[in-house]
Image (cartoon, rainbow, N blue to C red):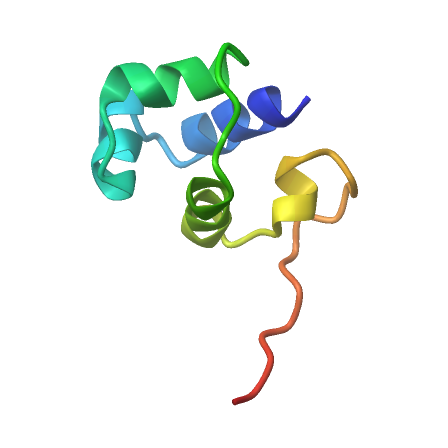
Length: 75
């Protein structure tokens, strides 16, 4: 499910896999393997994807259907 959500969010923003890979500083093939579910997504990359899409990692992982990110903690 996470892979489908990531692909759908990317397509909703009219971004290519290459553009996403560039934003994440990774190879396009690596990013494509995340979307296809061939490769697990490292925590740091998953967090960066959530930031790009302004959502939570729980939403990306299918743990919630709420797209809105959690409030940021004040430092």
